[in-house]
Length: 260
Image (tube, rainbow, N blue to C red; front, side, top):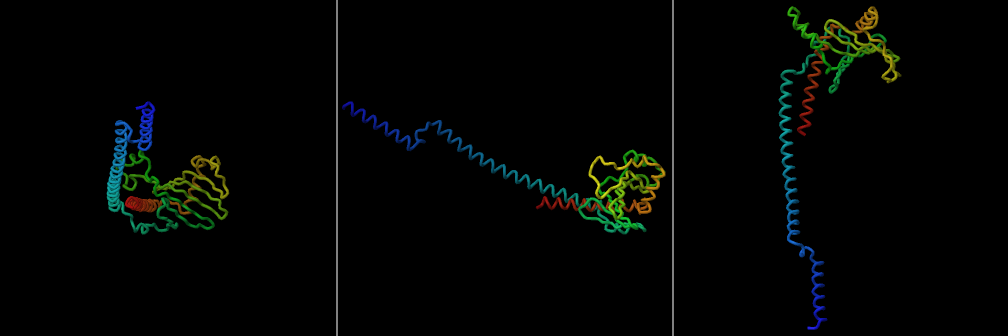
């Protein structure tokens, strides 16, 4: 065999191998490369399987948690109906001579009392969620006195904002605490319809720093406009009743959201 023939066969064999490597690159990979590819495919399958399992488990956990929450809410609704059921006849307890019209919007926390007095418009805003009992020290002192009537064993109060306005829009705004036996004026300011929202605006002196005769005159000013301690018990019952109604409706709304 000539040397030229040997070179031709060798060249032909090399060209054939090169052509095969281009046509089938996987066929020339080593065993370790095949193992890596197999592991990658297995890993992808495991991730997909775990993802599906995790999603299923999350769905089951959410369903269980929601069902448990609804059950607890239903129990609370039953307790609220039995122990703090709203009194449908609360208006029948309105005292004689009560001069205000009551505006009570469901879903709002405040109750608005309104009346006209000669050329004035009087509005009283009562927050049904505000605290109505005095501080703990005063309660303890009252409870320690066994000789007191039950009516005065715990002294409660109703915080209110009383606005007295005239046609030009200017109004006197009183911060008031209503007790069963007295009306306490906590603050007094004058509001202008074109007033500034500046937080540093002068709002008058502390009411307690006013002359005693001036304080008494302001108390009389509110009294003849219908702000009297004789109405405190009725207002306390009304706002407590409203708070019960709002709480019960809130529970029902939350239950409906979770169920849907």
